[in-house]
Image (cartoon, rainbow, N blue to C red; front, top):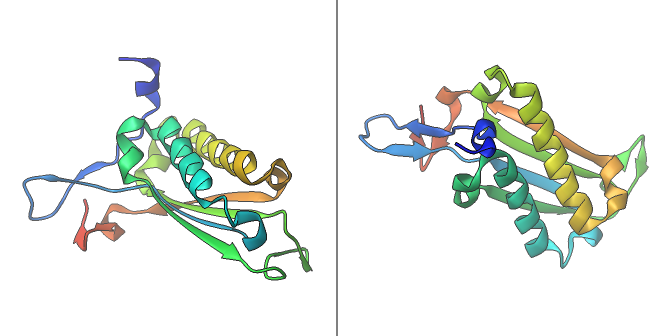
Length: 150
């Protein structure tokens, strides 16, 4: 076992009414100023995927789902004023990650890795305005391919 194995987050789950296994996936919704995102989509998708793989492990690469949304000028605001140096990342994760003894370390790694990916691809000036929110999904509320994954 290498040191990386100690930090992998197991997401393999058994589906209802199935002898096989189903995989839940880390799914990201990323909102960035449209003028900052345009033309950088492939590089950003790759960097965000790599950030998740750095924490979860290589096995998760094909399961990472990324949705990029460009926010038109004037529609991203902070403190009541339009800004173009903010980003918002919502990462859906299984609720069990917060119950692990290493939860604080894993969540910190996710937040830092995703912020680093955005800053590296879109611009270092976005770092301070990047918010990463981890959303817990209880097993009974997680579906893959229309089937409950438990």
